[in-house]
Length: 429
Figure (spheres, rainbow, N blue to C red):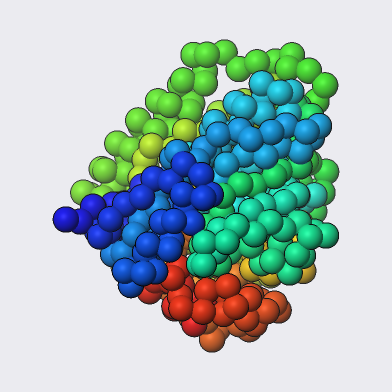
């Protein structure tokens, strides 16, 4: 018998020979030993929010739903099991007066999946979420549970914080958290020209800044989030429902379905959407501002670029969008992060700007994504490990200064490639 699996977007599917639900690191080690004895490869899966085949396997699929508990809270250090979803993590931290210093825009991923692929938010002073890791434990191919931190086994620490599931299976992570804080969200439409003319101020003078560009227009939606002392301007429940549920999901989903069936409607819909958005300002707990519901399914590619290359990449992307034989229904997202020292982090050694391109699930996307990747690669682009890419180990070795160190450590920890699949073979060799 086989067990079918599909990711959230529906673009990756697999049938595993068997599925394991370990409840401890010891049980996980037994699962790995049994798989190795039977000649089966192993992949751990989270919530399926990666668009790549990173979790695809016809061997043993490990689901960490029974390893999703709080382990301990010690001041600002919080240890959780690796299968905990971000939504649960955020609620758990809030109950202890804590919060993640930064987050991406969804909270459906497991903490291990988010960390292993380099998931990030936006903010010039913040790296990806993996920069908040103070320590972790990893169960390796021989069933050993290894612990590491910046001072204990530092090479493993610098490799395992973003590891694409290639070194082992995370069992616990210890996160350095912040005291719970409130954000003032300022979201408003504007002209693309205004973004470029004030970009340095937008990025440098806000804790968190991002913008969305609507294809076939010169319009954007800008988002600025800044820390404030108190939640003195909450968003009315009806407005949150109208903006985040009805307009951003129900209405947008209908527009995408219409655009897929009748491509000639995409341009006018994009123009109407860009003009229809209204400004809003409100305060709320940080995780309630960072994370929003996403129910309209899509596929995505995202590239981290040196910040100085952003304008060239963005202008090139606009030309690509205008010349495609089909229409693009999703806005383009642009975010910013700080440099870090994690070997396979997209932000290794440099401040990044990110461009994320999306297409409605079921609509054509490959030419769009391939042409954007061809534009971004020579500009120093590094693909987000959880988003679609077509790169190979040969090209990625040129993009990551510590790539060879990572693959050498992989050779040591997993010489028989228990954790390999076609994706890791393509991107890591």
